[in-house]
Every structure is written in C-alpha cells, then in structure tokens.
Length: 130
Image (cartoon, rainbow, N blue to C red):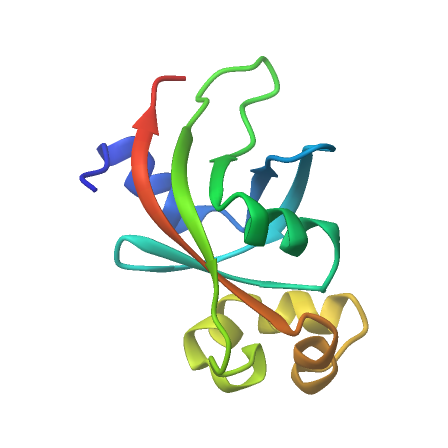
C-alpha cells in the first residue's frame, strides 16, 4: 500500500493507534504498534479483541487528531494472529520504541511479553480520507 507523506509521518512518530475490531460488540482500543513495511506488529492480551480478530480479520485504525479535530488519519487492513512469532521482549525494534514506556508502567520486557502474549500482524490495505 502506498501511503501519503502525512500517513508515513504518523506511522513514524506516533506511539499509539486506535484499533477497531468488528463483531457483535465492536471494540476500539488504544494499542502500541511497530511498523514493519506494509504491516503493523501489535502485542495484545488474550481476550475479546483477539477473538473478534479471529472471527473477522478486517480492522480499522486511526491516530489521535489535533485538539480541534484536525489532522485525522485512518486506514483499513487485514489482521492475523501470528502463532510462534517472537515475543515482544525478543524484538529489538519493538523494545527500542517502547522500552521506556514499558518501564514507565512499572514492568519489564519479560513481564510485558508474558502479559501481552498474543502477536497480531495487520497488513495495511487502504488509507482513508480524514
């Protein structure tokens, strides 16, 4: 997927995206992510979000807007659960991006990886207008 410059800037600088899943009880939750080419790597706790992704892998993501509602960036994609993928504590780029945040919430990479044990890869499909 080809991103606009604004989209690429968001993916490079943002710490959190909002991930929306579908299902009987749709859910929109903030998640940490690591961009890897045309996909995003997300570590999650097991639960409803993961169950909804297994049932309906089409997801929607967006970033925070400005306080006045400007600079909105959204995109759709396809999510998959990655069994056997290295945990967060073994992914150097993920730790480089979130190591300080993991410490700030009073955790360690190993404890974080044990809690956020489900690995989700989202392949970016389409950038949407704000």
